[in-house]
Every structure is written in C-alpha cells, then in structure tokens.
Length: 432
Image (tube, rainbow, N blue to C red; front, side, top):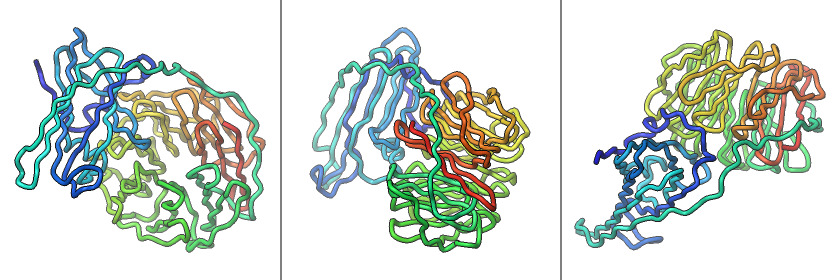
C-alpha cells in the first residue's frame, strides 16, 4: 500500500477536474485540531488524522473541502490501493493558520472510499489521554445538473446621484452594493436607492475596483496613488498600500485576512488581516485584474497578455497565447477560469492550459464575472455585454452605448454592469 501525504493544495489543483455531476457519494468527517482553553471542548490539545484509502482498481479523482461557504472544493487524486492522510496542520493551514479549529472535512466521490479517522487528545502533561478510531460511512447526494444556464433579460438603467464613470461594483447583498469610479466617488445602494458616500479621495483620483469580505470590511483600489480606501461599515479611510509601484488596479480576497491587490509595474500586495506587504510578481508589466478560488489558487492578468498564478507560495507566469491586454479575470473553479481583454479577446483555463474562446465581438472587453460553469457575463466598449451559456458567448442588448467597465452579480438574484466616461456614468442591472 502506498501512502500519499497531503502537503499543499498546489498538488491537488494541478489536476484538471470539472465533472462534479458524477460525484454521488459524500463523506463528512468531524475534526478537532489544536489547543483549546475551554469552550466548545474541554481544555487540552486535540489531534485529528483523516486517512483515505482507494480500494477501487482504478485511479480516482475526488473532491475535498472544509465545510465553510468561502472555501471551494478542490480535486485530489489517489491511485489503486493508495492512502492519503489529512491531519491538523493542513486543516489549520487551509483555515488561515488558526491555532484551534473544529468543523467538518467533506469529500465527494463517484466511487466508494475507505475513510477512517484517528482522534487523540492530550492533557496538561502532554501525554495522550484519549484515542478513538472512527470509520465514516458514505451517504448518497443528489446529482448536480450538468449545466443550468439563464436566458436573455433586459438591462434596466438605475437612477443615481450625479457622478462620472463607474469603474467597479461589488456588494455584500442586494441591499448593500458599492460602486466606485472617476473623481474618487463612491456610491452605495441600500436596496431602494443609490446615494453618495463621503470619500477621503473625492475629487482627487479614479477609484478602480471594489471588493469586501462583508458590508463592514470593504477595500477600494485607486489609480495613480499607492493608497487604498477601507470601509468599516461607518466611514471610509485612506490606507497606505505598502509596496505599491504607482497605483493599484484591482482587489480580491479569499477572506478578510487573505486579500490581494494588483497594480501598475507588476505590483502585487497581500493583506494578512493586520498589514499590507508586497509580494514578488516576477514582472514589471501592469496588472489589471485579480481573482482566485482560495488564498493558494489566485490568478492575475494584465497588459501584453500577462497571466500569473499564485499557489500559496510563489507567483508564476502562465502562457496566455495572446499579446493583447487582458483586463478582467474570474471563474467558477480553479479549472474553469475566463480572462477577457482587448479586441474581444477571451481566454479559458481548464486547469492545465489557456485556450482562445470566440467572443463574437471585436470590442475591448473590460471585465468578466462568472456565476457558474454555465453562466458568465463580460462587458466592454460601446455598451457591449455578452453572456456565456455553457458552450458559447452570445450578445445581450445593454440599452446603452456607454463603455461598460465592470460587471458583478449575485448568483440567482441580480447582475450589475457599470461604466461611463469622464463626462457620464451608467449603472444597469438585470435579473439573474
């Protein structure tokens, strides 16, 4: 029997994997990890070791995640008669390095697995005081439809206070949406109306992007300045972007304590929940957009067809197959990612390579948002909106000729497209 230790997510993410629909078995394993001072469990040090054996006479790709809404499944591979171990150091690393964690590790598979967990606990003296071995049975889960898409819907213009071009849009929910843009202006939608918020950058710069972990923890990037804006739910404040190289362009985070910013001259910054610090990008090319599935699976795109990938340790270039500027990146999983850019360029990543995808337009595309493997939207010049239906990109009438600079939405509820010029602005939305 061969044993494989799960040392890093990059091992798993290298495996092309899309076929979630075939996974009909689920294993949910309780874990308790680290030192507890009391509370959910008695004081002491707890250890969990999850052992997974593939008894099937074939190699098997299956899926693993920690049960939390912000962590996605990622694929694992076991050959016949191989064993994989997931223990507390790896679990705590996935959860951001916390000292104590309890919850569920969830596995989805199309074939049966042997899942056996060893639990141990140590008291104040450091010696093992309890030990238990538990075998987790499989339960059947409902099959996921291979592809469920949406239909063409009208894009309705919103009414908002006088501002100019909108460069970014993001929301915590449909009654807590932010849009940022030219002149340092920030708009907020409360579910009924858009209103201006007091901005410490008003009249000074262009705000380029917005993202938050919640409505009271929102970050905004800005052009031409090594500063960011942060919203705590009550006021906006300026934050120095340590390591910036003359301006920031895009922001995305895996959690409140794992946020990435990219900008001009190849700048990449990371926030650990306390401080911002620079990361080595390996390029001096302007980076225009960032997105990921987790803190160890992040993509950045930029000028001249630049694509970088972060595996949790280092940033590495990936060949895009184009020299055109790429302005937006988003995906539904680490092996289902779209990058869009000039000339109607669209590239798709399947977990191994980037390939060209026909867009049906030559307009410059400025942003893309992906709701699922079968639903995505991209926006661009001259009011261009195109929608992905799982197989092809098709045009949708936007009702405007204004350049659309950003798109974002709430899966199942609503999608926003925003844009404009230095003399105009537009915010439009459609039902999902």
